[in-house]
Image (cartoon, rainbow, N blue to C red; front, side, top):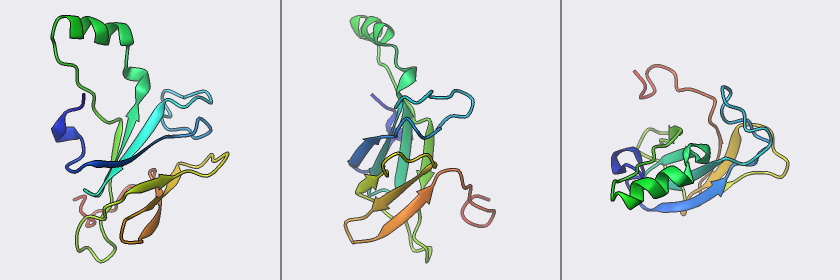
Length: 129
């Protein structure tokens, strides 16, 4: 279960595991395995989730005690329209075969397509004051 404040504001339209050939976390390498998944929604957000933080024994123990468990994204990416007119909602995510770059293709239901690089940070004045 995830915190609603840290998750999507609309339904999750797509979820994909990030290929193990892509290094997501520099401090904690994935060693060629797929530990991260990415979700997209029409709210203009992409969330990358690290599944290594899930300890099944701990989850079962918390559930047995009826204590809630919460999951938060490892990384969140907000995409706004190029003209600044609002969020750019997406419904599909695509990774290329044998990909090694921290990028992915995303498409909206309206036919918009974008190549997104999650290592690029917005400059000041682009909504990141």
